[in-house]
Amino acid sequence: MEKKLALITGATSGIGRETAKILASHHINLVLCGRRKERLDMLKKELEQLVKVDILPFDISKPSEVKSAFLSIKDLVPRIDILINNAGNAHGLSSIDKGDMEDFEKMIDTNIKGLLYVSQEIIPSMVNKKAGHIINIGSIAGKEVYPKGNVYCASKSAVDALGKAMRIDLAEHQIKVSNINPGLVETEFSMVRFKGNQDMAKKTYQGFTPLSPYDIADLIYFIISRPLHVNIADSLILPLAQPCATTVIREIT
Image 1: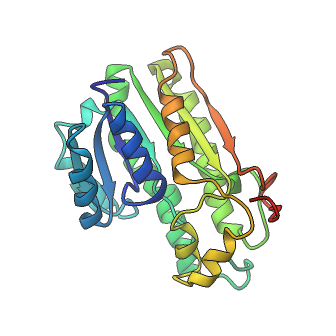
Image 2 (image 1 turned 90 degrees about the vertical axis):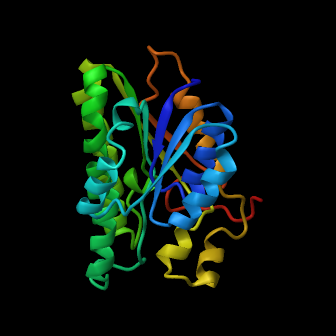
């Protein structure tokens, strides 16, 4: 894996940040993307002693920003071996009739359209060199719909379908495509979903041991480090206490 180059979206926190750390520890060079430049700068400073790190601050939901960002690294794009489509969000938790349309649009713009904007910047180069690996971070919400999850579940179902479609379309070009679908992972996810309500966010993870960002990052490295002929196409990773999307056994710690 040494001398490979990976691009990670949503690298400023949670799964993206931990993935950057694990890949750096295995000598994989990095292009780190996110909206918060100050966090990207801090992560670059932390990791550049191990590997070459480039940062790319932009919002994946805004196509003009995506275009400008990738133009600024046009010489690097053909060298990207691994694309990790990690950036995503959830806004609100309400029934479909009471949901905020702005929240719905944010989830669609980031989770579906943003993934497509970034992928289309990188896939042509992978096709040209007939090599590459795309990791899409989905969710158990893309496998099972749960109450008040509506548009978030729909957006992650789209990620699931897009990953399958990418795998079919790109197989002839020897490009691997893998989907990872986590259950409850303790990150900033719930703080965003509940619009900064710390009490609500904390309750999401109380009474059991959730997955950590490291757990997902560790799985990502495992998947990308398999032999060339092996493609782990789809994985569902859950905390022991969460057997399905709608059930959490909170006595398990």
